[in-house]
Length: 149
Image 1: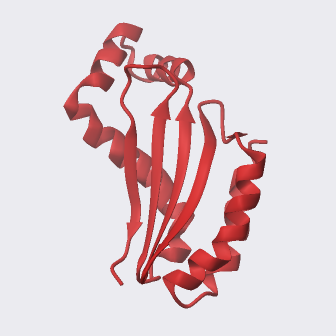
Image 2 (image 1 turned 90 degrees about the horizontal axis):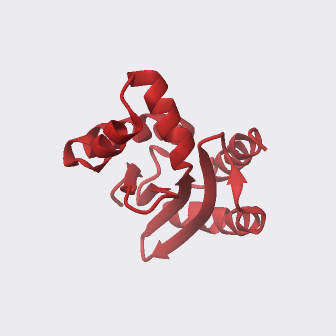
């Protein structure tokens, strides 16, 4: 299942990059997004699962949103290995406002390359939402692409 999501994304990118407008991209993505939603949740890796995908058309604008759940325990275990802080210290750090900018930058960096084919589509926005599976940990909305029409 780990390779499923990149393959689906590649198919969506290949299919939609040929569209000339954001509305054409939305129209082409809609059936594929419906198909993806039939298969959800999809484990992307041992930390992240894709749990939702949508596309919305608004006059000359298309918003595509992907929603992920982060396995908090696995994420915090990785943090502990990487930074040597305790579980409690990492939870405390995640709850601080200053951590939000760092997390958003890291998440955006991981997402931008996947959606490069869409960078020149005017009127297109691609957002990703990351939510922890534990109550009390913050959620993150990443604006991957937001092109004016």
